[in-house]
Image (cartoon, rainbow over all chains, first blue to last red):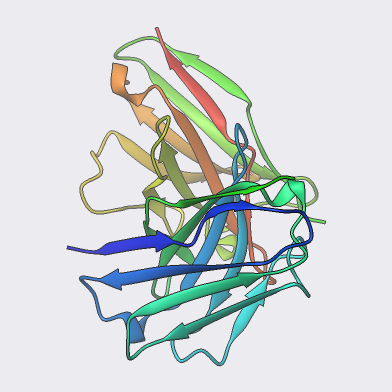
Length: 119
Length: 109
C-alpha cells in the first residue's frame, strides 16, 4: 500500500523558513518523480515543485522560485521542501504527491501538512 | 501566465449526467496537455480520477470518463450519485510545469 506522510508544518513568522518532509513507503521511491502541491484555505490546489527520480531535475512554480529548494534522499525514501522568506500567502496545506510515471500527471497524494505564516 | 478555466459550479440530478470542462485562457487543450482530473471531498486530500485525458485511475468507477470536447478537456459523470457531490479539479501540463484549474463544485440534487 502506497503511503506518503508529510511532516514539518506549523506556525511560522513572516520572513521565516520551513523544511517540510515526506516519508514514502509502499512503492519503489527511487523510480518516481515526486511533487509538492499546496492548497490555501478555501482555495484550489496549486502546483509548487517537482524533483526527478535521481534528484538532478527540479522544477519550481513562479510563486516559490528562488526561495524554495526541493530535494530527496532515495536511501531513506524521503522527500523534502525547504521554503524561505515565508509570507502570509504561503499559508496552505502542503501535499507530497507521487508522480504517475510517463503520464505527466499526479498519482497518489499524502494527507498534507498545514503551514500557517502569521505573526 | 497560463490560466486553466473550469466552471465554478455545476448541478446535476441524482442519476443524471454532467460534463465538466477544462479550458485554457489562450489556446486549446489537447492530449499534449496531458489533462488529468482530481476529486476532493472536504477535509481530504485530492484523489486522482482520470489521467492522460481519458484513463481512469485504479478503483475509479466507470461512470467517470474523460475526453477532449472541442477545445477543452472534459470530465463526464454518468449516473451521478450523492457522494459525487464535491470539488473537481483539472490539471494541465504546460511545458514548464503543471497548472490547476480553479475547480468545479458539483452539487447533486
